[in-house]
Length: 248
Image 1 (cartoon, rainbow, N blue to C red):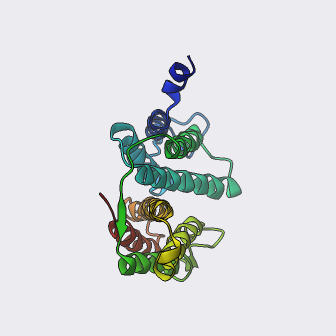
Image 2 (image 1 turned 90 degrees about the vertical axis):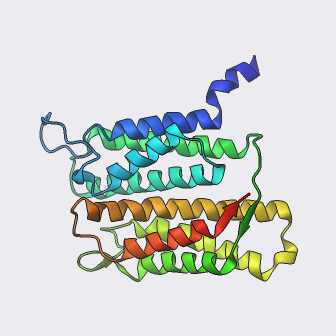
């Protein structure tokens, strides 16, 4: 009976529920422009400066196709981070947050919970390998972009209280860089099991960076001219980081 009860709440099931919630959240307004405003301002549009569209795409991806645990966790964490940042940035100055933003937060939270649960479930384990130099370079690019480069006109860096997107990028890239340095400098002290765990963490961090920086780049595509060079460099760093870690 316990096994039957646990089946609907497997990690992958939670991830799919979370992905569905994320995708559906963008059909509602994330930013209310008036009392019971009509027509509805979808979160996929420019009102969320790329955050809503990213949450929509990540949600669909998690819903429709199963991915490795590391990729799933990274994408879910990235979507959670940008949704939380959007809510913080909007609620600091106004009370215009719509239902869609809160649904996106709930959906991304469920996806993160499901991805974490997948870590402890008996699944096939993939062997991961990495290329130290590209991994380190990608991490350094993302770290540098988070605090050194401009993220919005002003200019303001990614750690500024009016931006915030650089904070999770700095954390994720810092973790990946620390893992790389550890694996290169003291490989004899790292067991194979620990090595695979550390590489999975770095891989997740890379995909989280892709989602966070990618949302800002999508904001540029949607016509938000506020974003600067920081997101583009962070995106390049995330691409290098994820491609330098392969699964077999």
